Image 1 (cartoon, rainbow, N blue to C red):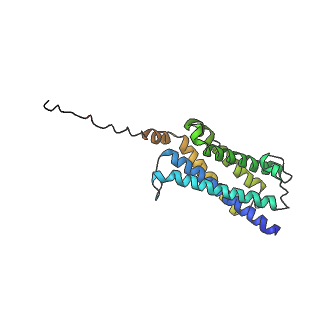
Image 2 (cartoon, rainbow, N blue to C red):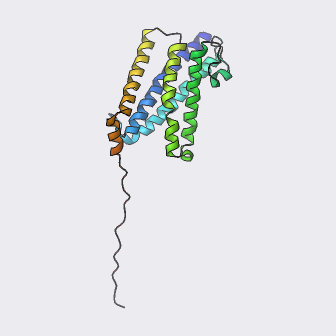
Image 3 (cartoon, rainbow, N blue to C red):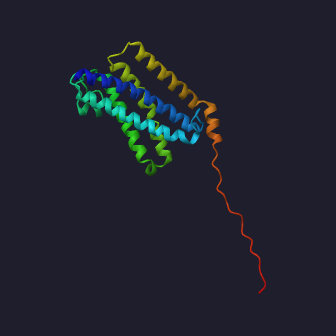
Length: 198
């Protein structure tokens, strides 16, 4: 049973990393206002949210299996308070940091209409901190560190997000953002009244 839990924890951790990478990439594309091949511009926001929800499911699966696994020796407090775990406290602590930031993103997403657009955007930048913490957690605490498939996956994720962040902070991204001008409201034409005979 313990071996099964460990495999599920490892697999769900890797899937979580891939999904979180997808969330960051889709968020940047959504902000740019550009479509993706086979996906119209208006649908990117919906896909971004759905991938984020799926990532939360896999992060939850990762956490629950590690809590149930006696080898990991994790307790509830270790999930919320970083760097308190007995097993590889630094790297496991980065996983706790990731969880805390993801929870903050969930809460701010649910309260988006109450926070206002500017505050929501500022808090949403936490995703740029959660993602590298997740990568470091996976590379430092995983038992598969040094395996080609894990290293290759991590490098691919780093290259993809690194390229997207460079694009996000570049001049071409700003031009696209400036090009998204709001459509002025439609004003009905003035009504012309004619005076009839009295």
